[in-house]
Every structure is written in structure tokens, then in C-alpha cells.
Image (tube, rainbow, N blue to C red; front, side, top):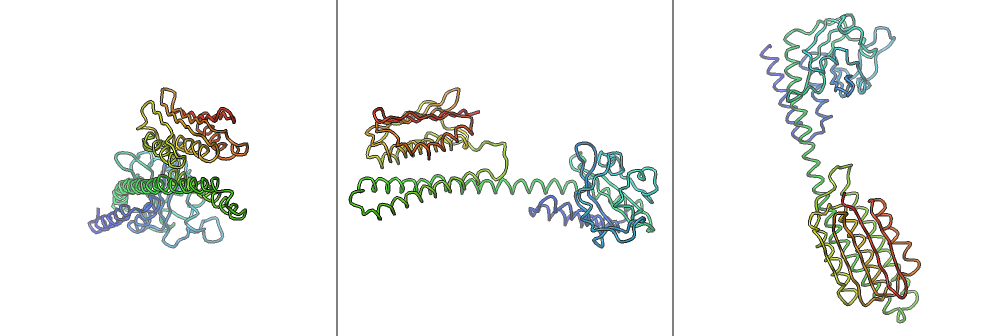
Length: 393
């Protein structure tokens, strides 16, 4: 290989590596790879083709020196923009398809007439003649083919240029692996930050809003006769707005924790500690401490499952505080082979008619969506039992 050409190839590879490690998306890095290949090979067009599952290759990036395709011989005008080639598919038996399966680099003086390539030339590329293709990949795994083209009438690619293209394509495969790794690390960092924000919203902000709403509601009920009707209505509106805000924040938390489909059900959560916190807040508002009974191991509950249980406990205790007038409340949380079972019992006057269609209805929807079970038993004489069962698998 010509030393000058080799030095230029090394410089281009260094530039692409720096771009990859800076956190650019692999797609952007691939476009840079194609542009540098065109410059190094003194070509008019370059394509990066990625192998599909069926053995065909698909154009993922394209670069032309003038931004447009060469004029097709059979056409009357200039070709369209190079960008139109993205998504173009070539058959597995084409030269690019063979190279992408691990074949040696291929070069042709005119791929329109060369018997190895002629049957597979798409109409979009018929304005070109000299052609070369080299495999690119990393770690012995070929990802696709890097191809370059010159307009018809230009001289063919020299053996040294083809050798340079093969070496550069191999380096490009390593660079793409670096880009994918850097991008994955960036996503992990982003997910961690989103999880931190979600945790603070859920464990701090929602807790404070929840406690404030409970206190306001307790004041409204205890002092109803001393409030003017308009003041009582305004206080009720404020409580409703707090409830709505809490639901909106919970929705934000869910969105932050699920930015895209993930196989990981979430980091384990100590559900027992969460339950103690919910019971403690409810006790401050009730004026007596509810009884909490724990049975089983709760330190490794998946975050998504723990969120469902925590929401059920909070809603059940909220209804005890707001509506029951109970003097005793018992919370039982059990983990066994079937999953987690939550029971909240009180000796109050039962859940009013309209309440069962609001927050408790959401818990029924939660249980159904998560493959669990929710039921409510309430009467003015026996009090209320809220049950929420959730499998862990």
C-alpha cells in the first residue's frame, strides 16, 4: 500500500474513532466512515451496507462527492439525491452480499458488464462503472460491506486502493463497535439519572403532597361547621388538586422509569421499609399507629411490583384516614411462593358509595394489568377490608 495513502487512512480512522468515543450515534459514525472511504479511494460514491437476516444487504449510509447520484445511462436527466439510496436492498448473491458474508474484497473495472456483478446492479447505480467492496466488522464478525464507485469512464480502482479500502473497512468495524459501546454506556447513565429523579419524586415529593392532602382533609372534616360554605368548597378544591398533582407525578415517575422497552423489571426494592413509611404517615394523621405485620422476605422485590403494592397500601390507608372513622387499623403484608399479599383492615364505618369508583378502581386496574387480584369488602357495621395480591413472576 502506498505510504501516503496508508497515512491518510490512519488519520481518517483516528478521526472516526474520536467521533465514536465522543458519544455520537452509530448511524452518524457510519456516515462519516463512508465519507472518508470516498475521499481515500478518490471515488464518486460510497455505500455502507449492513447484512439482513435473510442474507441480503441494506444500504444504511451513503455519500456522494456532489450529493447526487450519477446520471443513469438510460435516463434523460441527472439522478436523484444520494440520500435516496438509504434503504436500498441488494440480493445475497450480489458482490456486496457475498462480501458481507465474509468473502474477500471484490473489485471490478465496470460492474455493469462484469459477470460477477452485472446481474445484480440496481437501476439507481447504473451511472457508475469502476467498483470495489470490502467487508467490515469486528472480532471476526462481519457486519456488512463497504463499497465505493466511480462514474463510468473513469479509471478502475488500483490494487493498492482496494487493499487500503479493506484495511480501512476493518478499522471501521472496530470503530462502530466502540460507537455502540459508548452509546450503550450513555444510555445506562441516562437511565440511572432518570431513576434517581423518579425515586426522589416518588419517595419525597409525593410523600409530602400525600401528607399535606391528608392533613387538609382532616382539618376540613373536623372543622366543617366552622367554615363558610365558600371556604369549605375552596379547601375541597385544593385537596382535589393535590390528588390530581400526585397522580400526574406518579405518571411522570412511570414514564421516567420506562423510557423504552426493557427486559429488566427494575432494581430490587425493600418493600418492608416502604410499608413502614406509609404506615407511619397514616398513623400521624389517624392519631393512632396502625398495626403492621410482615411475613416473608421483602428486600428483593422488583421495583415495578413494589410500586404496585406501595400504591395499593397508600390508597387503602388514605381511605381509612378520609372516610372510615376507624379506631383500629391492621396492615398485613405477606410474601410466599405465590407472590405478595396485602391486607388492610379497619373497624370503621365502611367506604362511602362514591369512593369505590375513584382511587380504589385504579387499584383494581393495576392488579388486572399486572396479573394480580384486588377485592374490597366494606360495610357500615364490619368496617373495610382491602386486599391486593400480586405474583412476582
